[in-house]
Amino acid sequence: MFAAITDLSGARILISNDDGINAPGIKVLERIARSLSDDVWVVAPESEQSAAGHSLTIRRPLRVKQVSERHFCVDGTPTDAVLLGVNHVLTDKKPDLVLSGVNRGANMGDDVTYSGTVAAAMEATILGIPSVALSQYLRPNQPVHWSTAEHWAPQVIRKVCQVGWGRNVLMNVNFPDVLPAQVTGIEVVRQGKRKIGEELVERHDPRGEPYVWIGAQRAEDPGIVGTDIEAVVRGAVAVTPLCVDLTHGPTMDSLKSLFG
Image (cartoon, rainbow, N blue to C red):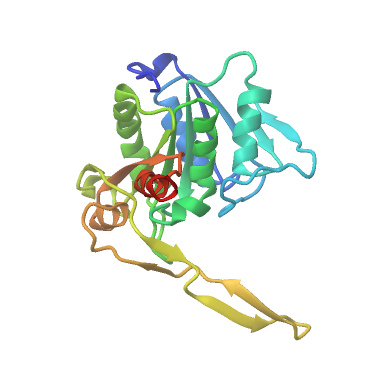
C-alpha cells in the first residue's frame, strides 16, 4: 500500500501531462498543485503527445531542457517525462505525489488505454509513487470549463491521499463539462466503455494519394449507471481507481484447472 498523505503541505509534487508544457491545462494543474504544496515541479513533454499511451522512447536519445525555475521539458512522451523527472531531474529527493493533466478532454472508458495523461500517472505508479490523472471533459465547439477542474481538484486530491491505496493502483479523475457550482458531487465509479476510431475519414492528399484519418467520434453508452462516462455526463466528478496489473484472476484460475 502507498502510505496515506494526511498533510500535503510538505509534499514534493511532480506534475506532467500529454498536451505539452505550454498547454493551458498544465498551468491549471500547477495552480492546483501550488494550492496543496510549495514544493511543486513541472516536467512535461515539449510538444503535444495525445494518445501516446504508455510508450517509452528507447531508439534515440532524449533531451531535457530547463525552461525556468522548477520547469523542464522533454522531447519525448509523457512516460519519458515522468521517468526523467523522477530519475534525472529530482535526484536529490523523489516526489511524494505525481499529478498528470489537466487533460483537455476526458479520459474515460477505453480512452485510458491510449491516454498519455493516464500513462504519465501509470509510470509514476510503476516507479513506486502515488499518482493521480486529471482530465476535463469538454463538448465539441464549446469553451473548456477549466475552472471546474481547478475548483474541485484540490478537494479530490486531498481526500484520496488521506486513505492511501494499493501500490499497483493509480487514480483517474474526470471533471464534468459544467460550471463549478453546477457539479452534482464526487462519485467513485468504475471504468465505462467507449472506443475511439468508429469514424474513419478517407480522403486524398494534394498529390492524389489516398489517406485515412482516425476521427474523434466515439461510440459510448452514457446510460450505464456506475461508470465514469455516466457520472461525468450527468455532471459529477468521476474518481476511478485503475490497476496497473492487467492479469485477469478468474480466467487465470480457469486456465490453471484446464492445464492441471
